[in-house]
Length: 333
Image (cartoon, rainbow, N blue to C red; front, side, top):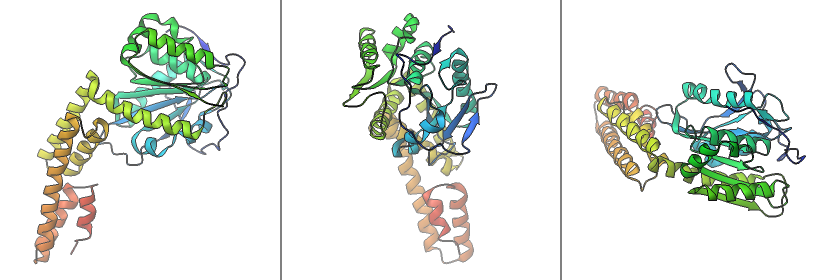
């Protein structure tokens, strides 16, 4: 780990926009003074694995201001979003890098994080830090969202730069009038020269050193597509999807149908319906649907209240947390 400090480049302060901070939402990285704000996916269920996006703010900004704009509909539904604070509001350094790396296993213990889907993003000073950390530790990350900044610090890791460019996903965003625009355009060229296969460069017309809600919306769409690609193409992603399908199948054999449903749905959401993994998950869900509807049909047709109650209780227990359990509630005698 080489020492470096990422603060103000070209004399630019880093305020993308002013937003009301989320009160009372800060947590602390174990063993470090860095705090963070976290948002769980709206349908979070520990029975499935979830992508993790860690965001780094710009110089002079804080995580509490950055976080709300990243709670788009797609990200709120599908991704664990975390905005991290640097120790010094004016920049990021090697101690902050340690906190970023420590945060990943901490969150993985607390939440069901997909190890193949850990993403890093940042704006301005946070973008420079994002590039440096993602490239130096590229085996930990699926990719990076680098905004209003570039790769000057990351280029010191020459071998890691080449390796990351070949495997990881990069979204480069910069305003047309951003003083860091030339730096980002050079970053785009550098990644091309390194053989980068998965990259998108966006230059936002008419804006300077900032980004807007509509820009985050587009980034969210790109991220969801990239998550699916990583899931079905990378070795770690494929290994994880196979493991999750196996776990769902074992849950079916134990009649833990609610857990199995969450597992199959998670694979489908991650891999997409057209992939082999998605097709297997779709079949698993269809089989569970047929099974649940059969029990519900028998319950509706049962004239004996006691027998009907047993069938309803079975669905409530075995399909816990599913839409079928909700339907069974309506059939209680």
